[in-house]
Amino acid sequence: MKIHEADARAVFSKFGLPVPPSTLVATPEDARAAAAELGCPVVVKAQVLVGGRGKAGGVKLAANPDEAAAKAKAILGMDLKGIKVEKVLVAKAVDIAKEFYVGMVVDRRSRKPLMMVSPAGGIDIEEVARTTPEKILKIVIDPAFGVLPFQVRRMSSFLTADKDISKKIGGMLVSLCRAFLGVDASLAEINPLVVTPAGEVWAIDAKINIDDSGLFRQKDAAALRDDSAEDRGEVEAREAGLSFVKLDGSIGCVVNGAGLAMATMDMIKHFGGEPANFLDIGGSSSPEKVLTAMRIILRDRNVKAILINIFGGITRCDDVALGLIEARKHLGVDVPLVVRLTGTNEERGRELLAGTALIPAATMEDGVMKAIAAAQGR
Ligand code: GDP
Ligand code: MN
Image (tube, rainbow, N blue to C red; front, side, top):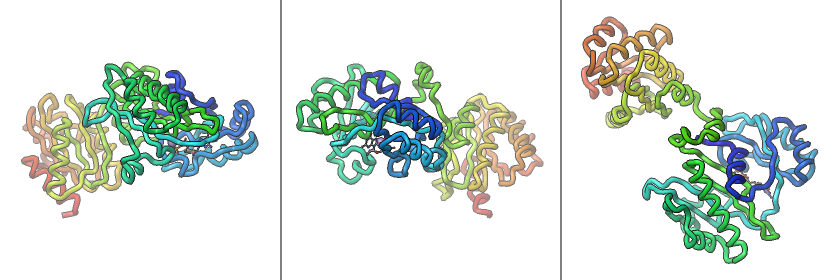
């Protein structure tokens, strides 16, 4: 789960990172007042859950309160990568002598937290990783101990030869690691961490993603959820207890069980089709769940056919059949539906579907082939 910069700044502050003071506002007038109170110059920053706001025009410096109001007016309501800006953060600006990148993620390969630092800060770190990977130092962290002193020294001396600044950055690395572990983050990033001409260090940007699996014990963080940057279908699916990921293909998939869902997508690809989504309707799926799944999938205009692939264990095939019949009735389904039902109550399920416009499939392979043919209009 992504959280806004303003909230991530609060987390960083709580864990002792130096973050310039700031105020969250929704109008130019409030931006003016915030700038006057904080003291200028300030930086006005769009609060949207997308990266690269600076490049897209969502981060602007202002020398005085009037300018802060004008910049806020320009940014509020702006469309940033498909998301409308509703709020801006007015933050006290700092002078920048040097920008560093400092971040922490969960690393799949080592199955541990990984700290990454780079002297090429401020810009897109993915770009740095692609073009000049030697400018990034990665250190695997043992979650039982957190970042250790020798690791801190290696990273901070990789960033700067200045002993005094190196020491200050070292302190920030320790705090960042505590924050990351403390809030069950899957990502925590300071880009840029800046050094001022006077030798102060500041975290002037803050990004935190919280691990969804940690939200049950991160109640404060769970309250920070903002769905605006997510796909509408993904939000609706989460609320209905479905796992759904939108993809770009033309074959909608309704499947029970994550393993079967992946196998279905693999088989669609194998036979030359493209799945429009990953969707796991879960174990004990009621007709309502199937209905919700169909509604979410049918909203995608790219979908030319839907494959329903159900292995009935706890899920009963007759329940699924009822859901499909309801869906056709209420949703005005105008694409071919290919149905493969096997397992618990499959005969009852097939009886219910007989005489409807649904296309039955004998096996998974048969279902996939029929769905591809239907999607291609054959
Ligand atoms: P992002 O583009 O979404 O990552 O937003 P950032 O918060 O990283 O801001 C983008 C860029 O704006 C930074 O890399 C800086 O160059 C500039 N910027 C942000 N805050 C300040 C500030 O306080 N002072 C100065 N001089 N520049 C800033
Ligand atoms: Mn940034």
